[in-house]
Length: 378
Image 1 (cartoon, rainbow, N blue to C red):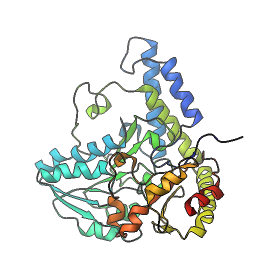
Image 2 (image 1 turned 180 degrees about the vertical axis):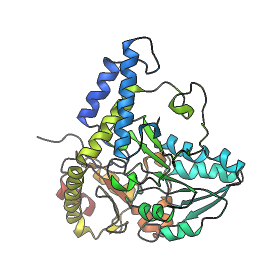
Image 3 (image 1 turned 90 degrees about the horizontal axis):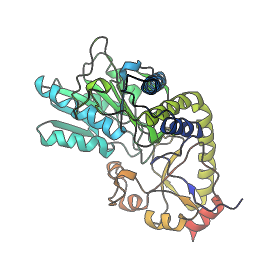
Image 4 (image 1 turned 120 degrees about the vertical axis):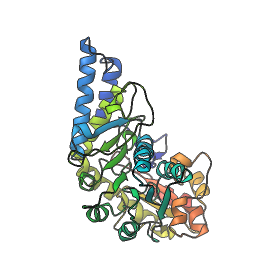
Protein backbone atom coordinates (compact mmCIF):
# COMPACT_ATOMS: atom_id res chain seq x y z
CA UNK A 1 0.00 0.00 0.00
CA UNK A 2 1.34 3.45 -0.93
CA UNK A 3 1.54 5.79 2.07
CA UNK A 4 -0.14 9.15 1.44
CA UNK A 5 0.74 10.76 4.79
CA UNK A 6 4.08 11.15 6.54
CA UNK A 7 4.79 8.76 9.41
CA UNK A 8 3.93 10.49 12.67
CA UNK A 9 7.04 10.80 14.87
CA UNK A 10 5.85 13.42 17.36
CA UNK A 11 4.32 11.22 20.07
CA UNK A 12 5.84 13.28 22.89
CA UNK A 13 3.57 16.12 21.78
CA UNK A 14 0.48 13.92 21.62
CA UNK A 15 -0.15 10.25 21.01
CA UNK A 16 -2.58 8.53 18.65
CA UNK A 17 -5.77 7.22 20.21
CA UNK A 18 -5.95 3.54 21.11
CA UNK A 19 -8.93 1.94 19.29
CA UNK A 20 -10.31 0.51 22.56
CA UNK A 21 -10.14 3.97 24.13
CA UNK A 22 -11.89 5.55 21.13
CA UNK A 23 -14.72 3.01 21.47
CA UNK A 24 -15.25 3.90 25.14
CA UNK A 25 -15.28 7.63 24.41
CA UNK A 26 -17.73 7.24 21.55
CA UNK A 27 -20.07 5.15 23.73
CA UNK A 28 -20.30 7.84 26.39
CA UNK A 29 -20.69 10.65 23.88
CA UNK A 30 -23.38 8.96 21.78
CA UNK A 31 -25.26 6.58 24.09
CA UNK A 32 -24.54 7.17 27.78
CA UNK A 33 -24.43 10.97 27.69
CA UNK A 34 -25.83 11.61 31.16
CA UNK A 35 -24.39 14.14 33.61
CA UNK A 36 -22.45 12.50 36.44
CA UNK A 37 -24.09 14.95 38.82
CA UNK A 38 -27.65 13.97 37.89
CA UNK A 39 -29.05 11.76 40.66
CA UNK A 40 -32.68 11.39 39.61
CA UNK A 41 -32.38 8.99 36.66
CA UNK A 42 -30.42 6.03 35.33
CA UNK A 43 -28.37 8.10 32.85
CA UNK A 44 -26.78 10.02 35.70
CA UNK A 45 -26.25 6.86 37.74
CA UNK A 46 -24.44 5.15 34.87
CA UNK A 47 -22.31 8.24 34.23
CA UNK A 48 -21.36 8.33 37.90
CA UNK A 49 -20.42 4.64 37.75
CA UNK A 50 -18.23 5.28 34.69
CA UNK A 51 -16.32 8.03 36.54
CA UNK A 52 -15.95 5.78 39.58
CA UNK A 53 -14.52 3.01 37.42
CA UNK A 54 -12.07 5.39 35.71
CA UNK A 55 -10.92 6.69 39.09
CA UNK A 56 -10.21 3.11 40.17
CA UNK A 57 -8.37 2.34 36.90
CA UNK A 58 -6.09 5.36 37.30
CA UNK A 59 -5.56 4.63 41.00
CA UNK A 60 -4.46 1.05 40.27
CA UNK A 61 -1.91 2.25 37.72
CA UNK A 62 -0.08 4.41 40.29
CA UNK A 63 -0.88 2.37 43.44
CA UNK A 64 -3.06 5.13 44.89
CA UNK A 65 -6.50 5.16 46.47
CA UNK A 66 -9.48 6.20 44.29
CA UNK A 67 -10.16 9.17 46.59
CA UNK A 68 -6.64 10.43 45.82
CA UNK A 69 -7.47 10.87 42.11
CA UNK A 70 -8.57 14.32 40.95
CA UNK A 71 -9.61 14.71 37.31
CA UNK A 72 -8.50 17.90 35.55
CA UNK A 73 -8.27 19.21 31.98
CA UNK A 74 -4.67 17.99 31.66
CA UNK A 75 -1.20 18.11 33.18
CA UNK A 76 -0.92 21.87 32.73
CA UNK A 77 -3.88 22.42 35.05
CA UNK A 78 -2.63 19.71 37.41
CA UNK A 79 0.78 21.40 37.61
CA UNK A 80 -0.78 24.78 38.29
CA UNK A 81 -3.01 23.35 41.00
CA UNK A 82 -0.06 21.59 42.63
CA UNK A 83 2.11 24.71 42.72
CA UNK A 84 -0.27 27.66 43.05
CA UNK A 85 -2.66 25.63 45.19
CA UNK A 86 -0.01 25.30 47.93
CA UNK A 87 0.82 29.01 48.06
CA UNK A 88 -1.86 30.00 50.57
CA UNK A 89 -0.82 27.30 53.06
CA UNK A 90 2.85 28.11 52.47
CA UNK A 91 2.45 31.76 53.33
CA UNK A 92 0.44 30.93 56.44
CA UNK A 93 3.13 28.54 57.71
CA UNK A 94 6.24 30.49 56.67
CA UNK A 95 7.05 28.04 53.87
CA UNK A 96 7.92 30.30 50.95
CA UNK A 97 10.80 28.49 49.25
CA UNK A 98 10.48 26.29 46.15
CA UNK A 99 13.03 23.97 44.53
CA UNK A 100 12.71 22.86 40.91
CA UNK A 101 14.87 22.43 37.79
CA UNK A 102 15.70 24.51 34.73
CA UNK A 103 14.47 21.78 32.39
CA UNK A 104 10.86 21.67 33.58
CA UNK A 105 7.96 22.20 31.19
CA UNK A 106 6.64 25.76 31.05
CA UNK A 107 3.52 24.48 32.82
CA UNK A 108 5.73 24.17 35.92
CA UNK A 109 8.21 27.01 35.41
CA UNK A 110 5.59 29.68 34.74
CA UNK A 111 3.44 29.01 37.85
CA UNK A 112 6.65 29.00 39.90
CA UNK A 113 7.56 32.35 38.32
CA UNK A 114 4.17 33.72 39.34
CA UNK A 115 4.98 32.86 42.97
CA UNK A 116 8.52 34.25 42.63
CA UNK A 117 7.06 37.60 41.60
CA UNK A 118 4.84 37.41 44.67
CA UNK A 119 7.70 37.02 47.12
CA UNK A 120 8.53 33.32 47.08
CA UNK A 121 12.19 32.32 46.88
CA UNK A 122 13.06 29.86 44.11
CA UNK A 123 16.08 27.64 43.43
CA UNK A 124 16.29 26.06 39.96
CA UNK A 125 18.82 23.26 39.48
CA UNK A 126 20.63 22.91 36.15
CA UNK A 127 21.20 19.48 34.61
CA UNK A 128 24.50 17.99 33.57
CA UNK A 129 25.55 17.75 29.91
CA UNK A 130 23.50 14.58 29.59
CA UNK A 131 20.30 16.33 30.63
CA UNK A 132 19.96 14.70 34.05
CA UNK A 133 19.80 16.67 37.29
CA UNK A 134 21.70 15.67 40.44
CA UNK A 135 19.36 14.41 43.16
CA UNK A 136 21.90 15.28 45.87
CA UNK A 137 22.04 18.88 44.65
CA UNK A 138 18.26 19.16 44.91
CA UNK A 139 18.22 17.73 48.43
CA UNK A 140 21.08 20.01 49.52
CA UNK A 141 18.96 23.07 48.74
CA UNK A 142 16.20 22.21 51.23
CA UNK A 143 15.74 24.80 53.98
CA UNK A 144 13.38 25.01 56.96
CA UNK A 145 11.23 27.33 54.80
CA UNK A 146 11.03 24.96 51.79
CA UNK A 147 7.44 24.37 50.74
CA UNK A 148 7.72 22.28 47.60
CA UNK A 149 10.12 20.33 45.39
CA UNK A 150 8.91 19.89 41.81
CA UNK A 151 10.86 17.65 39.41
CA UNK A 152 9.59 16.14 36.14
CA UNK A 153 9.91 12.39 35.69
CA UNK A 154 11.20 12.57 32.11
CA UNK A 155 11.92 15.56 29.93
CA UNK A 156 9.54 16.11 27.02
CA UNK A 157 12.28 17.37 24.64
CA UNK A 158 15.16 14.98 25.33
CA UNK A 159 13.39 12.02 26.92
CA UNK A 160 15.97 12.01 29.73
CA UNK A 161 14.62 10.29 32.84
CA UNK A 162 15.22 12.19 36.07
CA UNK A 163 16.31 10.61 39.39
CA UNK A 164 12.89 10.44 41.03
CA UNK A 165 13.66 7.24 43.04
CA UNK A 166 16.79 8.84 44.53
CA UNK A 167 14.86 11.98 45.50
CA UNK A 168 12.00 10.04 47.08
CA UNK A 169 14.47 7.95 49.08
CA UNK A 170 16.10 11.09 50.47
CA UNK A 171 12.70 12.58 51.35
CA UNK A 172 11.30 9.58 53.22
CA UNK A 173 11.42 11.33 56.61
CA UNK A 174 11.22 14.92 55.38
CA UNK A 175 7.98 16.96 55.53
CA UNK A 176 8.53 18.95 52.30
CA UNK A 177 5.84 18.39 49.65
CA UNK A 178 7.06 16.63 46.49
CA UNK A 179 5.46 17.10 43.07
CA UNK A 180 6.27 15.12 39.91
CA UNK A 181 5.16 16.13 36.42
CA UNK A 182 4.74 12.64 34.93
CA UNK A 183 3.29 13.73 31.59
CA UNK A 184 5.81 11.71 29.57
CA UNK A 185 5.94 8.61 31.80
CA UNK A 186 2.44 8.03 33.17
CA UNK A 187 1.41 4.56 31.99
CA UNK A 188 4.88 3.99 30.47
CA UNK A 189 7.29 3.77 33.41
CA UNK A 190 5.17 2.07 36.03
CA UNK A 191 7.05 1.34 39.26
CA UNK A 192 8.70 4.72 40.00
CA UNK A 193 5.31 6.47 40.00
CA UNK A 194 3.89 4.04 42.56
CA UNK A 195 6.19 5.46 45.24
CA UNK A 196 4.04 6.91 48.02
CA UNK A 197 6.59 9.61 48.80
CA UNK A 198 5.39 11.39 45.65
CA UNK A 199 2.70 13.64 47.13
CA UNK A 200 1.47 15.18 43.88
CA UNK A 201 1.60 13.63 40.41
CA UNK A 202 0.42 15.26 37.18
CA UNK A 203 -0.50 13.54 33.91
CA UNK A 204 -2.46 14.07 30.68
CA UNK A 205 -4.74 11.70 28.77
CA UNK A 206 -3.35 12.60 25.37
CA UNK A 207 0.18 11.43 26.25
CA UNK A 208 -1.03 7.90 27.06
CA UNK A 209 -3.07 7.11 23.92
CA UNK A 210 -6.18 8.69 25.43
CA UNK A 211 -8.18 11.83 24.68
CA UNK A 212 -7.09 15.46 24.77
CA UNK A 213 -8.77 17.74 27.28
CA UNK A 214 -8.56 15.48 30.33
CA UNK A 215 -5.83 14.77 32.86
CA UNK A 216 -5.27 13.76 36.43
CA UNK A 217 -3.69 15.04 39.60
CA UNK A 218 -2.84 12.32 42.10
CA UNK A 219 -3.00 13.87 45.59
CA UNK A 220 -1.65 11.26 47.99
CA UNK A 221 -2.50 11.35 51.68
CA UNK A 222 0.16 10.97 54.37
CA UNK A 223 -1.83 8.87 56.78
CA UNK A 224 -4.64 11.19 57.82
CA UNK A 225 -2.84 14.29 56.53
CA UNK A 226 -3.93 15.65 53.16
CA UNK A 227 -1.86 17.88 50.92
CA UNK A 228 -3.18 21.36 51.84
CA UNK A 229 -4.22 22.47 48.35
CA UNK A 230 -6.56 25.40 47.75
CA UNK A 231 -8.67 25.40 44.56
CA UNK A 232 -7.80 27.79 41.73
CA UNK A 233 -11.40 28.04 40.52
CA UNK A 234 -14.67 27.94 42.44
CA UNK A 235 -18.25 26.89 41.89
CA UNK A 236 -19.80 23.45 42.14
CA UNK A 237 -17.69 21.47 44.57
CA UNK A 238 -16.79 18.62 42.21
CA UNK A 239 -13.53 16.68 42.68
CA UNK A 240 -13.48 17.30 46.44
CA UNK A 241 -13.83 21.03 45.81
CA UNK A 242 -10.43 21.20 44.12
CA UNK A 243 -11.68 21.21 40.54
CA UNK A 244 -15.31 22.32 40.24
CA UNK A 245 -17.27 22.01 37.01
CA UNK A 246 -19.26 19.38 35.13
CA UNK A 247 -17.15 16.28 34.69
CA UNK A 248 -16.43 15.31 31.04
CA UNK A 249 -17.57 11.71 31.45
CA UNK A 250 -16.54 10.47 27.96
CA UNK A 251 -13.02 11.86 28.36
CA UNK A 252 -12.66 10.53 31.91
CA UNK A 253 -13.88 7.09 30.86
CA UNK A 254 -11.38 7.15 27.99
CA UNK A 255 -8.57 8.14 30.34
CA UNK A 256 -9.51 5.27 32.64
CA UNK A 257 -9.33 2.77 29.80
CA UNK A 258 -6.00 4.24 28.65
CA UNK A 259 -4.60 3.86 32.18
CA UNK A 260 -5.75 0.24 32.35
CA UNK A 261 -4.13 -0.56 29.00
CA UNK A 262 -0.96 1.25 30.05
CA UNK A 263 -0.68 -1.04 33.04
CA UNK A 264 -1.52 -4.21 31.12
CA UNK A 265 0.47 -3.62 27.91
CA UNK A 266 3.46 -1.52 28.96
CA UNK A 267 6.04 -4.33 28.59
CA UNK A 268 4.92 -5.12 25.02
CA UNK A 269 4.84 -1.43 24.14
CA UNK A 270 8.31 -0.87 25.55
CA UNK A 271 9.75 -3.76 23.55
CA UNK A 272 8.29 -2.36 20.31
CA UNK A 273 9.65 1.11 21.08
CA UNK A 274 13.13 -0.24 21.80
CA UNK A 275 13.16 -2.20 18.53
CA UNK A 276 12.10 0.95 16.65
CA UNK A 277 14.84 2.94 18.41
CA UNK A 278 17.53 0.44 17.41
CA UNK A 279 16.52 0.63 13.73
CA UNK A 280 16.39 4.42 13.84
CA UNK A 281 19.83 4.82 15.40
CA UNK A 282 21.31 2.35 12.93
CA UNK A 283 19.73 4.19 10.01
CA UNK A 284 21.15 7.61 10.94
CA UNK A 285 24.62 6.38 11.92
CA UNK A 286 26.19 7.53 8.63
CA UNK A 287 25.02 11.11 9.27
CA UNK A 288 27.36 11.58 12.27
CA UNK A 289 24.47 12.45 14.57
CA UNK A 290 24.92 14.24 17.89
CA UNK A 291 22.40 12.74 20.29
CA UNK A 292 21.37 14.90 23.24
CA UNK A 293 20.59 12.80 26.28
CA UNK A 294 22.50 10.49 28.59
CA UNK A 295 22.44 6.95 27.21
CA UNK A 296 20.89 4.54 29.68
CA UNK A 297 18.64 7.24 31.13
CA UNK A 298 16.45 8.03 28.10
CA UNK A 299 12.89 6.97 27.31
CA UNK A 300 12.79 4.14 24.76
CA UNK A 301 10.58 6.18 22.43
CA UNK A 302 12.52 9.47 22.24
CA UNK A 303 15.67 10.71 20.49
CA UNK A 304 16.75 14.36 20.43
CA UNK A 305 19.44 14.74 17.79
CA UNK A 306 21.25 17.29 15.66
CA UNK A 307 23.04 16.67 12.37
CA UNK A 308 26.23 18.63 11.55
CA UNK A 309 25.63 21.58 9.24
CA UNK A 310 21.84 21.24 9.28
CA UNK A 311 19.36 23.41 11.17
CA UNK A 312 16.26 21.85 12.71
CA UNK A 313 13.99 23.93 10.50
CA UNK A 314 15.76 22.75 7.35
CA UNK A 315 15.70 19.12 8.48
CA UNK A 316 11.96 19.32 9.24
CA UNK A 317 11.23 20.84 5.82
CA UNK A 318 13.28 18.19 4.01
CA UNK A 319 11.48 15.39 5.86
CA UNK A 320 7.94 16.75 5.98
CA UNK A 321 6.42 14.40 3.40
CA UNK A 322 8.20 11.36 4.92
CA UNK A 323 8.01 11.84 8.69
CA UNK A 324 6.38 14.38 11.01
CA UNK A 325 8.88 15.53 13.65
CA UNK A 326 9.39 18.59 15.85
CA UNK A 327 12.10 20.84 17.22
CA UNK A 328 10.91 21.02 20.81
CA UNK A 329 7.87 21.38 23.01
CA UNK A 330 4.55 21.63 21.19
CA UNK A 331 3.37 24.10 23.82
CA UNK A 332 5.92 26.73 22.78
CA UNK A 333 6.23 26.03 19.06
CA UNK A 334 3.87 28.84 17.94
CA UNK A 335 6.67 31.37 18.52
CA UNK A 336 9.91 29.44 18.24
CA UNK A 337 12.51 30.20 20.87
CA UNK A 338 15.79 28.32 21.37
CA UNK A 339 15.10 25.43 23.73
CA UNK A 340 15.51 26.39 27.39
CA UNK A 341 16.14 22.70 28.08
CA UNK A 342 19.08 22.38 25.68
CA UNK A 343 20.48 25.73 26.85
CA UNK A 344 20.33 24.52 30.45
CA UNK A 345 22.27 21.40 29.38
CA UNK A 346 25.07 23.66 28.12
CA UNK A 347 24.82 22.67 24.46
CA UNK A 348 26.47 24.84 21.81
CA UNK A 349 24.50 27.22 19.62
CA UNK A 350 24.72 25.03 16.50
CA UNK A 351 23.56 21.96 18.41
CA UNK A 352 20.58 23.83 19.85
CA UNK A 353 19.58 25.30 16.47
CA UNK A 354 19.95 21.90 14.85
CA UNK A 355 18.15 19.80 17.47
CA UNK A 356 15.25 17.70 16.17
CA UNK A 357 13.04 15.52 18.36
CA UNK A 358 11.93 12.14 17.05
CA UNK A 359 9.33 10.41 19.24
CA UNK A 360 7.26 7.34 18.44
CA UNK A 361 5.10 4.65 20.07
CA UNK A 362 3.96 1.04 19.74
CA UNK A 363 1.43 2.12 17.09
CA UNK A 364 4.03 3.81 14.83
CA UNK A 365 4.56 2.17 11.41
CA UNK A 366 8.06 1.76 9.99
CA UNK A 367 9.18 4.83 7.99
CA UNK A 368 11.28 4.74 4.85
CA UNK A 369 14.58 5.06 6.70
CA UNK A 370 16.63 5.06 3.51
CA UNK A 371 14.52 7.94 2.22
CA UNK A 372 14.91 9.83 5.50
CA UNK A 373 18.71 9.50 5.42
CA UNK A 374 18.86 10.47 1.74
CA UNK A 375 16.85 13.65 2.41
CA UNK A 376 19.08 14.62 5.31
CA UNK A 377 22.21 14.01 3.24
CA UNK A 378 20.94 15.98 0.24
